[in-house]
Image 1 (cartoon, one colour):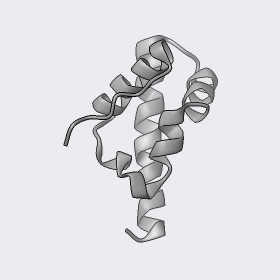
Image 2 (cartoon, one colour):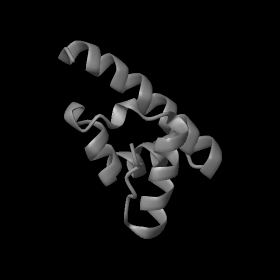
Image 3 (cartoon, helix red, strand yellow):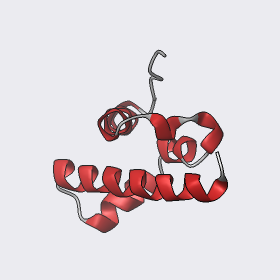
Length: 78
């Protein structure tokens, strides 16, 4: 995928995910962003080659919670 297209999609995905984290976990925007940006999930998400950007916000949020709770990420079966 073209880098500019990926960055546009990535920005939308991250915004949606931060909003979901903020609302569901009742965190401030700053804390939600900090937690997401420091996660392994974010590291995987920002790498276009992993194709994590193809997952729904709901699935990414589930993976975020799993990593937050257990320190691990279970990759969905494709």
